[in-house]
Length: 256
Image 1 (cartoon, rainbow, N blue to C red):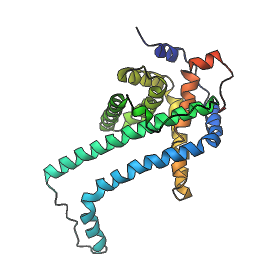
Image 2 (cartoon, rainbow, N blue to C red):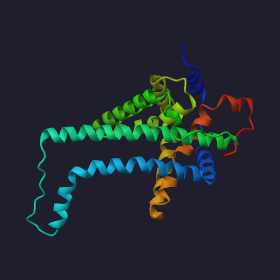
Image 3 (cartoon, rainbow, N blue to C red):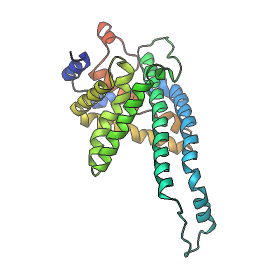
């Protein structure tokens, strides 16, 4: 028997682009503080891994800096094939590791958005609460996302513009549908993403540009704005698939 979410996607009405943007910008006032905390915590995981990734190339970078201005200097890239293959595998492993914890943080942020939206005093739990009992599912979802992105990139990059929409929906579908399997989440993401691709793509593009504004504020604002893209994704989910409890209480919705 097919999961009810697919029927809800089938019956979903086209969301209003302007309404989604308005609700998203209005919600920022209530969500900037939790967005800041989530962004800082995410950076704590990302920075050490980035440093570890670049450590093997420090001697080469130092040589380039020391010989800057020397037209006859050729940087030495004296690494064996085995080292390069091993390095690439380690980088991919580190990337997957970061994605797993970032995915859990994003899921927690979606829960915070939901609680703020309904005006609930319920505590959202620890930042990595979604890892408990879901590590395998999150691992497989991120592995699938990485595989889909790599295949799309290999196909002359054009398909990446298509798959980026359903990939953005993985986390929100996982957060509010814990009973869905990995394959069902992927299927639902592509079904919803395909149905409203242009709207979601436009929203994601605008939200991504807004997220980059944080860099203007000496990188401090970046910790707040980097999670902005998830606010319109939440409202897309709410206006298309929706929440059963909202149907029982039509007035639910503070972030409007």
